[in-house]
Length: 57
Image (cartoon, rainbow, N blue to C red):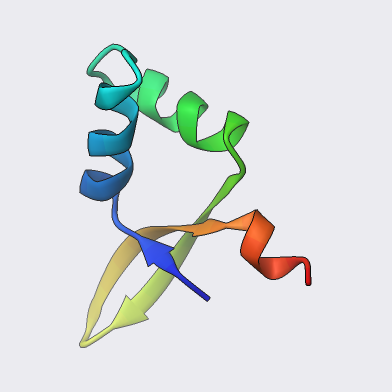
């Protein structure tokens, strides 16, 4: 399962011409098949995006 950070998704969105704000980038991720997920690692909470195409085998 491949995970992407917000910065990685943001870079992809900006290449596609999406405006640089959290709402637009979140809408880009949702409409392009990414699921937002919160994880807990090393005592900190992170938000990662998971590609839904990779989950359906």
